[in-house]
Image (cartoon, rainbow, N blue to C red; front, side, top):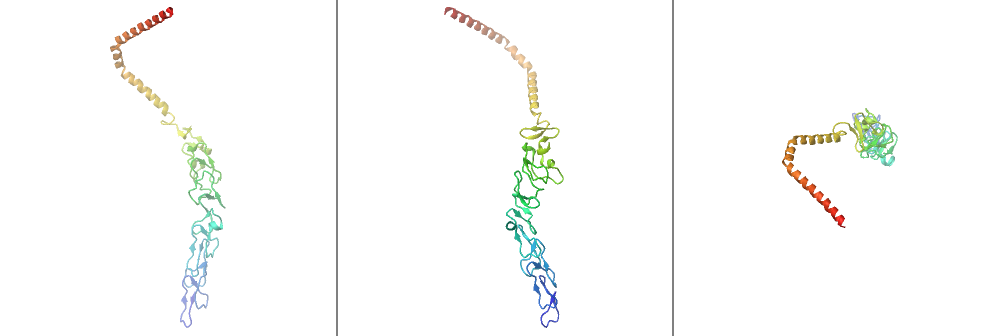
Length: 265
């Protein structure tokens, strides 16, 4: 890890990124793919998988960027996931393999697979366990590759199956349960247009309640105005009787006239 020139009185430590074997007169740069952070070293170190040293004399290794990987130690260049594995593959910074997928696919543990219908496609890096569903879809477990449309759209809220919950607990709205969130819990009823609804005031009993209130209001108005209605009838009683008599006379007259006309004909 030291070197000395001709006529030197002492040996000097090699700088970081370089090394010197025993009895060396000069320090040598670490080859590309190797590094040496310490001074006075007699050898260089391999860059670990997921990193690289692109040029000679590197004191440290650089992490591979997103979308690139270095599967072995001692790399001087990182490989591109889309070129080496396929257009669906991606990686995080400092990766030793391409184990991340673009937004349209998910990682099943071995490969990137196209997401089925009903799975959100707005985020990359999805794994099978963390697949996020759109509203109206359901799957039976975090390891299930099958996604099903729900019979009652509003019961299935979508999202991910939480690690501390079940499929129904994570994917079904409050008040719904069972396969495809198709069963209403106690005190809930199935609405044709909005799924499971709470059986409380303001839902199933709202219509009958409003009808009863209207009937009661009409009865109350009639009771409160009963005296006024009787006074009105008494005031116009004679006039109403007179109009009734005149109407009766007119009707009888019309009957007699009609009978006379028939006899004449």
